[in-house]
Length: 340
Image (cartoon, rainbow, N blue to C red; front, side, top):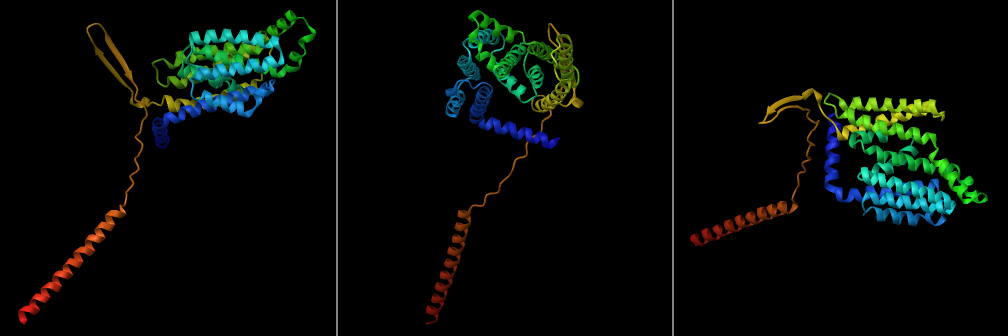
């Protein structure tokens, strides 16, 4: 455990020292992965699949706020959908505008959650996001996680139904709009996931705020179980055929990731808990203080050997030795002169 704490301190010191370089690199990678994921799932507009465009856009995003990555990602999605179907692009654009209104109104600082949620779905660990945002966010973070869920299912729907969406010209424009709206908004799996993730975020936040020992671990277990139960109940009620085995495996992997998050964000030692009581003119205060697990990183001492100093010492030694020989020779000459 001590070695892990030392590694944690080294990572914190490294990030604090090179934050000005690490942050742009992380933004660049996040933007690049998001754009590549969009291109891989859609890719209907050939020009936007050019790697040079993806790299330049990601590089531009690395120097801008994270919310700009959301706008660029949404723009890429709309352009790809426009190349596929005008009706689909218009419907998704209206949906994105509604999402952005909710997002910027309630949780404008959770842009990373919106971007990472679809990526977690792609990595088969989507349940890590509601748990993580319950720990490091607020109940309003359910809005940002919900936006990420909607983005994933929109991309998944378009990817699976691209041929049908591309052949809507045979129907009237109103029928085409109605078909796209019903297909996207009537996705029962998306509705179940939205409900499960929203409840999980709020419940994890409330439990981890309790003044009990191991509140984070309790919140982790309660959130994971609640998430699985809501998904299973939704599966039974709406008959959406969600794989129970994949849900359980994904939840276990998500919990393992959250354990790592807890170590870096909330590592405390409950064995040294202290209870403090004090008062002022108006209130009595009862405070529970739990110390963090911290260890000072050992400092490496490097002994420098100065070659110049050794050289000067050697020169001084030879100079002194030469002076001694000169004085000895002079003394002998004086003695010979006296004898004469």
